[in-house]
Length: 461
Image 1 (spheres, rainbow, N blue to C red):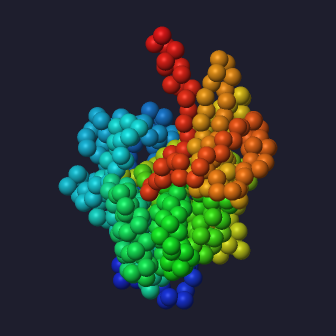
Image 2 (cartoon, rainbow, N blue to C red):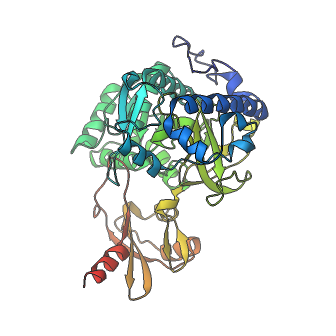
Image 3 (cartoon, one colour):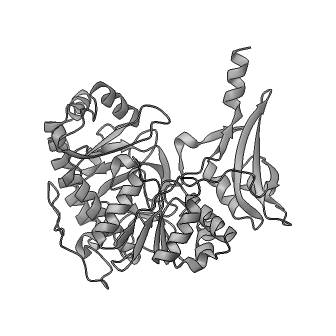
């Protein structure tokens, strides 16, 4: 396996010939069972390293009666207790600033990223220079698989702040040798300027969220610019479901007349592109030699068979500063066995990450994921660009209302029936004028659950 060492070391001068499909042909095309043997060895190295350097892991595993030398198979590894996000937050609160799962001296932390903290205590990512370069090399590999080359100009169209996504795309494109244009997002009026700069600089690759790509296409059209004339040949995304959802993916492809690639898992397990497309098709590969992914039953936290749905559990194989070992994602996906026809012998997630267990809501006994509604609504020919999902309760009955912007002079015929077929419950479709809802330059937030508000009000009356 090319440049497979512990701790990770990469030849920073290496770059494949432009016409070579794979960055590391051996690592990407080797028989999956051979790779699993190498991964098992790496997991044992990683666990020994964490045991020696992290009070967090040593305490957690000791309580479970597990030591690194007891892990002799990947099945044994499934017995290692998962790490949950709330554990990381609690550990950082008790051991500021980076937690006792930091495995290097604090003086070696060269970069700080983190979460926004909008849903609780922010989590700080302390990243050593070694890990920063490992992420850059990993992302360059995956972007190479997407067909991005040194001749490209890559526009980073997401906030350049604590958000790991922007910086991961930036350093990956930089390592690959492409021209990088860190334009960012989130400032009033910035989208209009993005259109202008894209034309001026000859941007060929766009990175951001699917929601923002659709907003960019809308603004370009408002300025009299056909998005397909912007010159993009590829767009790749992370941050939210969409790039593997046919209706959303199709709208982006049609708007820009360009190829679309999905990617992304969790900031905590960067390189987050370890779930990344290797071809212009819906779905992502699990680049197992970067981050070992297990799709697990949410109840037992053991791997489910290929063809089954579950929640990913991630183990970083090249991180030395804050390694994640069996981090529970609470996302939802379905995986398939490696298939050499895809050009790489990694497991495959045909719909990518299509929801979060946390985002699921229940209406009249049915489990509903927002992405399922998004897929149906955005495939309607009369769809006008945005929608909102409103759940409310009158007395004891839940009601589901989907407010949908529509194109002028175009009805949303049959949309309620299609939603009922997919969701299993009735949904009232309320057409509203195009432009009713605020647009986003980052991640879309479309669900409004009034039931919690109603319950809160009743509790205080």
